[in-house]
Length: 345
View 1: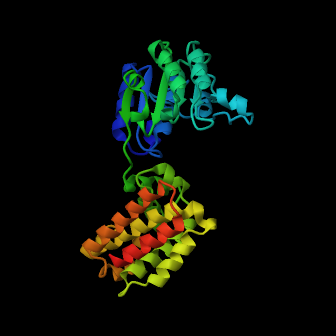
View 2: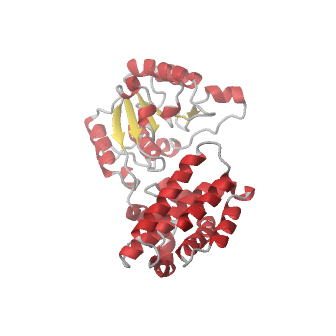
């Protein structure tokens, strides 16, 4: 049932209105950042359209159809099969299309075209959920466009994309777009507590770190985050010292760019930005709401040396580094330069 989904009340109400009027379009485009629940809403639509014992216009969540629909087949191991693969759920009328390499292939689009022309085998509608629809290559896009132009009345395509502008305009024009917004931290925290995923201070911290994305909150390794955060807090302490501790900054740069931490590099830069922003907020208002509320006392002690000008410049320098890393620069030299430039700011 839709009530179990988190946030995006406007999107939910729009979908419920379509279902109650019996006017669910043949093609929907769910647009919004990754991790805000677009796939879960798409599955809920598929369930509502095929539920054996619907409660009003919503799925019952207990019948065999509702139980089977979210269970999609795993990807095949054979590379040739992957190019053609669409993942059927446990229900024969619901399928998921996901990229099996860097793109969604024309073979997958043609499979959707072929299958969407058949009448439902068991339920009332065939539903094809296309994840990362912006990854359709040119041939796949053109094949899908043909399907959208002649879609059968008992078939529905739900395209999911965090970058809808990357889709062909002719595809977008044939879909009704429903936009999904990032979730409020409070909504994520309530969900984590209600579903017994996290509790207390941990739930509060994870909810604020998630950046409005429930998917990120559920995947976050809090122990790894805290380990990286302690290292980045050392950067903040070194910058706030009078004078800045340049030797310590260079030691952290060496650790950060070590090969064993290569997957942690960008997440730790994100953490550094968050810590600097928290310290900046506390320098303006000691009672401000911050992300790392469990570090409030430590950050408050540093806040007196984090004024508006320095904090702004520090965050600008981090953004400049991100831009430089898009080209082939030496990460160690660039990180040394970042920390020393921050110290000089």
